[in-house]
Image (cartoon, rainbow over all chains, first blue to last red; front, side, top):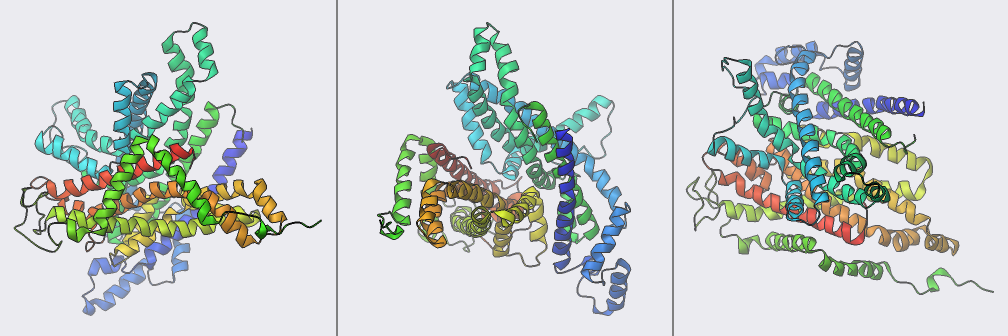
Length: 324
Length: 292
C-alpha cells in the first residue's frame, strides 16, 4: 500500500517536470537564431520575402512565443505531435520508426554491461588479489576513462578497417539479399557488435568495480560465515547468498545511467549511422525541426523518469528493509 | 563571571586549517595509483604552461598534409598539414581552460544553491532542492546538445558556460548535505552560542570543513567537463577555432581509414588525462574515506 502511494507521488512529480522541461526546451530552441523557414529558403533570398512571410504564418511561427507554446501543448494533449517542417511527415511516425533501433541498442548495451560486469566483478572479488583480479581492476580503471567515441573509432579501425570482420555502419547491409533467415540475423548481429560494445564500455567498467567492492563487502558479512559454517557449497554461498545482496547498488546505478546512456546513444548512433532517436535528435537540432525536437525530448525525458521510477520499485522489492 | 568573547579564543584561521587538512595529502603515498594520477596531471600542467617550449612547431605552421608519423612529425600531420604532436600539446591548455572554467561556474552555483539550502533550511531548502532535482533528472548530454546547438556562434566560451550551468546540481547536493551535517556539530553550535556572526560561522567553521569533498568532486567533474566538450565537438557542435582535443579527433573522423593518426593521438591524450583525473579522485576518496 505504501509502495503504491510512493509510486503515485513519483508519477505526480512527472507533471511539474513535464512543464518545466518542455518550457525550457521550447524557449531554448525558439530563442536560437534561425527558424525552419530560414533553413528551407536560406538567408540570401530577399525577393522571396512574401513567400517566407506566408510560410511563417502557415506554421504559426509569427505568433508570440507563449501562444506558440500553448498551441503546441494543446495539440500534444490531443495526441497530435505535429508534422516535420522539412518532409511534412508525421512526427509520431518518424519517432516510432526511430525508437525501436535505439531501444534495441540501449537494452542490449545495458544487458551486456550488467552480465559482463557481474561475471567479472564476482570473479575478481572471489579471487581477490589474484592476477585475474588485478587484470580486471586495471581494465576497469582504464575503461572508465575511455571516451566512447574514441573507443568506437579505434574499434572500427581495428575490426572493420584492418581486419575487415565487422561492418562499419548501419543496422543491416543495405540491399543485401539473404538466402536464409539465419544469414539475415547474422548480418544484424554483426552490425550490433561494435555499437553495443562502445556504448556499454563505460558502464561495464563502472559496474564491475561496483560489484567487486560490494561483493567483497558482502563476503565479509556474518551471514556468509554462517552459510559457510552450515556446510553449504561455495557456489551456493556466492550465488544465492552473496550475489543477490551485492547486486543491490547496481540496480540503483543502472537507473541513474539510463539518462547518460541516452546521451551516449546520440554519439554512438551518429558515428555508426544507426537509424535511432539519438541521431534524429542531433540532425533535427541542425535543421531547427521544432516539432521533432519537442516530441523527442518529451519522450526521452519521460523514458528517463520512468526508468528511474522502475529502478526505485525494483530496489524496494529486492531490499525489504526499504520503506517509503 | 564573564564569558570569553569568541574572537579571544585561540583558534586557527581558515587558511591554517585548510593546510592542516590538506597535509593529509601525505597519505597519498600509500595509494600508488593516485600518485601516478597526480604525476600525470602535473606533467599536463607543465605542458599547459609551456607549450611554446615543448611543442616543436607553432600550431599554425603547415607542412605537407597527411604525412604519417615520422621522426620529424611524431604524430604525423593532419589534413591541413599541421603537426599533430604540436597541436596536441597546445590542446592541453585549452583542455585546462575548459575544465577549470566549468568547475569554477559549477562551484559558484553549487556553493550558492547548496550552501543556502543547507544553511537556511526551511522552504528555501525545499525550493532549491526541487530545482536541483529537476535539473539532475534531465539527461545531461541531450540537454547540452540542444542548448549548444541553439547558438549560431560556435564558441568555446558558450560551450563552457552552458556546461557549467547544467553541471552544478550534484555539487549543490553534496555541499548541502555537508553543510547540513556540519551545521549541527557541537562546535558550530558553540560558536553560535558565543555570538559569532553568520559570516564568521560560514567562512571559519563551515567552509574549511567541506573543502575536501569539494576538491574530490572537482577532480572527477573536471574530467567530466573535458569529456563533454569532446563529445559535443565530436557531434559537430564544438568550436572549430579552438585547439581542443575534441576538434582534432573530429577532424580525423572522416579520414580514419587513410590517416588514423590524426584522431588517434589526441584521443590517446584525452584518454590519459581522463584516467589520471579519475584515479586521483578515487585515490583521494579512498584516503579520506569520503563518500561524494
